[in-house]
View 1 (tube, rainbow, N blue to C red):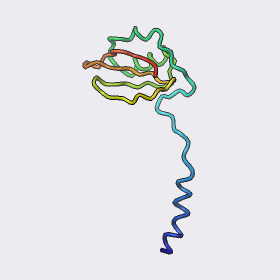
View 2: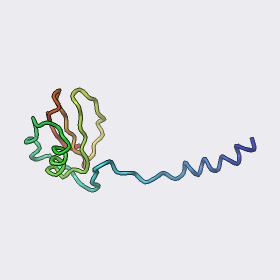
View 3: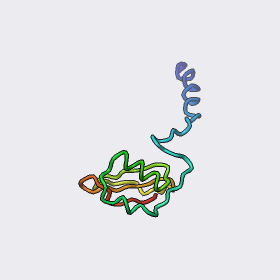
Length: 97
């Protein structure tokens, strides 16, 4: 029992301070996605270069690739570009959120 009492404050201290959020790879905080003009990417094969081009065109902060048939959360993020892919790995649709 005595050992637990000595360790307990350390455990509570560790839980009380949460680390700062680490941005996802390539995330650009503060950006708001714009969906106008994203239709031009439909039918193109998904590549890192295409992703960078789509991020630039949409001004989004992050990109979320959604493989064909995958389920995703419905939470909305104004800075995120969501790109749905078809069975061949080509862009089927792109939208903000």
